[in-house]
Amino acid sequence: MSGQPEGVDPLALEQQVCFALSVAARSVVAVYRPLLEPMGLTHPQYLVMLALWQHAPLSGRDLSRLLQLDPGTLSPLLKRLEAAGYLRRERDAADERSLAVTLTATGAALRAQAERIPAAIVQRLGLPVEDLQHLHAVLTQVIAAANRPGADPAAPQSGTAAQASA
Image (tube, rainbow, N blue to C red; front, side, top):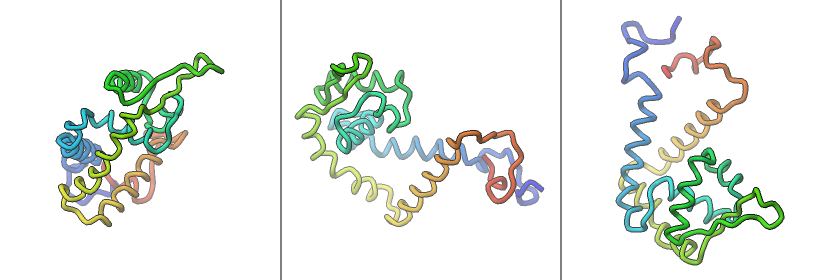
């Protein structure tokens, strides 16, 4: 039993959770773009700034873990943000291999402009806040399940999770 209704192609594009997630991610990032451009930020740079506004200073390693980005992807983001004057990257005096990432005064001040973004996104999407909170909770569960150590995607599954197309 595949868990699919009879007559539904399990490989149909519109049945794929991965397709819906991919299109939703691109669409939501596009909604952010006009809000971030006046700040001189791309969406990935905005995520870096969010992490730093909440947790700065951070080591490069901690920032990489927090954003779930590999260091090779994070490094160019940090270089561009440093060139824009929003942050500083400095070697840790105690451990030359470790990079400390701190906000500049300009980067810290940028937070005031960013504070309007969440409400603008909610308004633009036109969805109830409760629906967005529920979506966030479900996506957090999806991320945890996908990153679960030892999860074998080829292993047979049981229950409702196996019934949804991936």
